[in-house]
Length: 98
Image 1: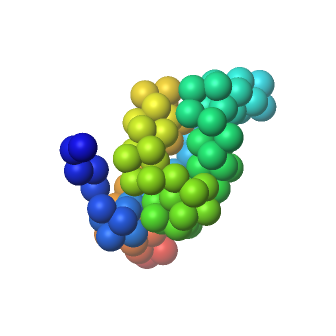
Image 2: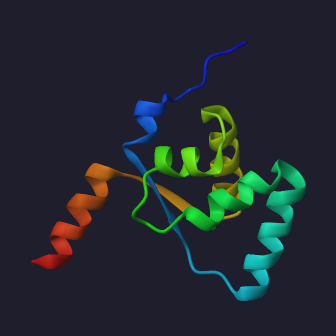
């Protein structure tokens, strides 16, 4: 079996950010997530708050690294999340405070 592209340690440095979607799109997306990946994928989407790192979300949803990455890939392909590094977020937030 192939090793995951990222490790649990790598996930600690990633923070997913949700983009704004309509309420209808939100519920439609949750249904697609549940149908395609199961209820744990819906938990992933619910836990994305711009503060939690990917590893915290993975643990809360009870997914493997590779399963989480598949869910993130799907969400990115739908244009509803963006993955940022902790460093990039800190840099962006620092600039907005100046």
